[in-house]
Image (cartoon, rainbow, N blue to C red):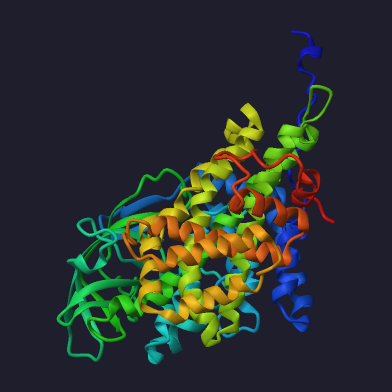
Amino acid sequence: MAASTHTVSNQPPPLLGYDVFAADRVLVEAVERHLPEDLLGPARTALGELGRAAGSAQAARWAERADAYPPRLRTHDRYGHRIDEVEFDPAWHRLLGHAVGAGLTDAWDVPGGHVRRAAGFLVWTQAEAGHGCPVSMTHAAVPALRTEPELAAVWEPLLTSHVYEEGLRPVGLKAGALLGMGMTEKQGGTDVRANTTRAEPLSGEGEYLLTGHKWFCSAPMSDGFLVLAQAPGGPTCFLLPRVLPDGSRNPFAIQRLKDKLGNRSNASAEVEFDGTWARRIGEEGRGVRAIIGMVAATRLDCVTGSAALMRQAVAQAVHHTTYRHAFGGPLAGKPLMRNVLADLAVESEAATVLALRLAAAYDAGSAAETAFLRLAVPVAKYWVTKRCTPLVAEALECLGGNGYVEESGMPRLLREAPLNSIWEGSGNVQALDALRALQREPAALNAFLQEVGRARGADHRLDRAIRELLTELADLEGIEARARRLAERMALVLQGSLLVRWAPPEVADAFCASRLGGDGGGAFGTLPHTLDLAAVVARARAVEH
């Protein structure tokens, strides 16, 4: 066979060996915006180190292996003893260890901790998203545990540790620990108050034995779990350790691992409790309230995780089309492709700016910012996670057939994209939660309107959208059936207000024209052609500026 037929040309180089943080103008600007000056230097250094690791060939190999060799369940050892362990490829432990070592479970009570952590989470999960599940839950469990100071004194230093130790041992013998969560059951799903797992009190203060099952138990090799069960006083939250202080295994029978569409590197399990020891968190009958802080924090991670997937998809699309030539020039320079790339970049920037604004609200911790989060988190979770899948699909299409091939990494992004819309409450749950906040917590709406009001007068399309939103909010007729429409409008108005204040004029103009002004279509690549689309695409390119 003639060697000349195997000459490779017009194939873009892999997007590797770059700093994922420094190459993301939007994220860099957000960190600089929300962190005080005295924290910026250390944050830039740490995020730069993490960004270079995330963009390395080594991290890419870890991601490929973790996805190609998913976890395996071992119910028994060679002698027939029940062990209920999950084996992961070494690449999984490398990814998880790097995340923990970078402080991605350590944000509470750290100055600027939530902004720094959100930026790090957005950077590192671009390398591989599946291991972000235990990272997110471990971080989010801290507020729930603090309702029981005795438990928090033992567990919180381990959850916020920068040391990752795999394997099941008593937590008192470990330098770091991870937490998972088990809420849903097969008969109830989202309706956790219909759970049937029973909790029988013991003589020890706050001690119970649990009997029942969990249909989805996330990260079953974690050191402990926050779970819901029916105590005599009603649904109650519990901390369930995998290993008891004396070194014996807590009854925790893993029935099977879920065979999932995406998120394949991460284990999700069906588990059975049979006389399983647990400690109560909060009061009996107040389990949903006790665990809601964890849910809210993981919902923010759903927003941040989706923003990460969007950013990586856009970076790959812009990179490919910059180097790929067709019809006499680079694809990225063709007017129609430029329109597609710009539209994707605008959506990605809106998601990143919103995610970091929510993280900054956590750091502020004021009553007004807490009220803002009560409404903004479900609204953002609803909309950003829903926009992720169509964006990743369109970005994959920018690579053509090359994007449909596993080696490109784009199929893994696409399989991962729907997860965050489902995890921690799907679209209807988020829309109805936002509605509940509107009806029961007037301070939340006031804080939300004050936030969007900061951009009033800067763009006539945004001003009109705010007026239309107020009209919708004043009409309570059929409000539940309109909850999705309302959540979408609120998210778009919030994103528009943030971009008008903080993004370059060409980005804010494109967003307001297409998302608020009606001058855009139902698919990406339908921005008004009169906009400065080249500048938008250049801003999104994954090169250091």
